Length: 100
Image (tube, rainbow, N blue to C red; front, side, top):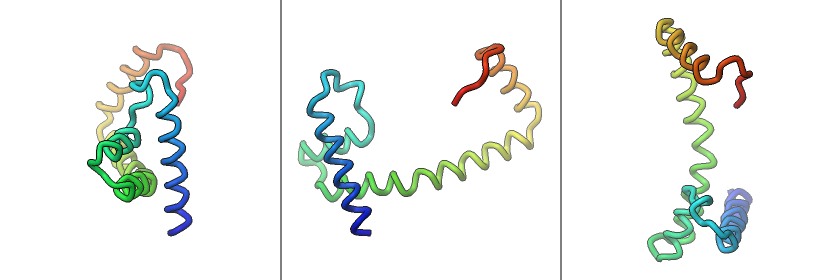
């Protein structure tokens, strides 16, 4: 746990350094940036920021995989919705190959 916490601190410090050198801040304003600025304002402690980032890193893959699983199950159970989605994808993408 100490190793993971130390790694998070390093990543947050790297993000903090990057934010201090960018020209256009709005292009780099993600959730971690908001947390860092909240700490700079005194709204959060360094420990709060570290814990939030750590929880995002640990929890996000699990919740995302569960959400995607149930979304795919629901699509499979409703073929008319699946057909409508495929028509919309084809209308937007056309004959191009899909990319992630």
